[in-house]
Length: 312
Image 1: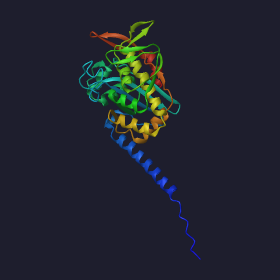
Image 2: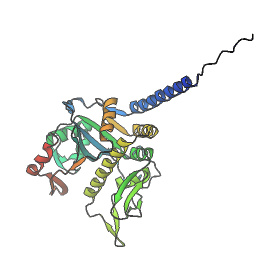
Image 3: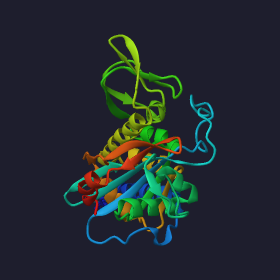
Image 4: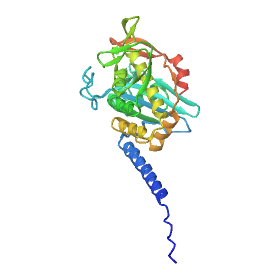
């Protein structure tokens, strides 16, 4: 009697499982490596300790040209040396939602480093810790974490998630930044055009067939930057494609600086809580003035208190 052949055990499910686990581990290492590549800055005692489940982040957009493509339309225009706090935003994330408030860079404040008064974006010249202290002391609100991103990393981030959609009321352009939007309505911008939108200093709309330059100048640009940041945070946070998320993390790692206390789980929690949401936007009440021949903004103390109380 011939021997009965033994059935070979199917091993392919275990092979698939091993491949699947290897991919997960590889992806985790990729994201972790990108996160570890982010620049970190020790702000010492400038930050307030996190207490409870509500956190205030100071988000700073820098106009550094260090990582910008030299072939970009506005790589050398205007000429800027060093780094400046071009956009300053306070973002609060808590169990009841998120709040966002722009701090005008021309806000007239006392510089903690010198004791002299000047524009708040000038306090960054003495380092990010001094800028954090300027916000804390002049607005009397706590700041728990700090994040700074340069404009060059915006482009890579937007490309990584497949573009960002901005609703344009009119066609718009800016020869200086390279912005060229030829239709009104929702328009998906790639990284290059998103960067041009954020940095447009001569934003011009086509209204009834005629070019109309934005009369609000820097105030309008700051509003566009705030709108961009709100949309970008929402789209990145709602992204579920792991490859896209990994690319986003890799794109940001070259142009992002965070405080040393912001851990990996903190960053993941922030992205998850912002995903698909739109932060409530609050406006800091200010009034225009001229001091020493310079145009600045003064805080309207009484009107500002209800707004600032939301961040306290």
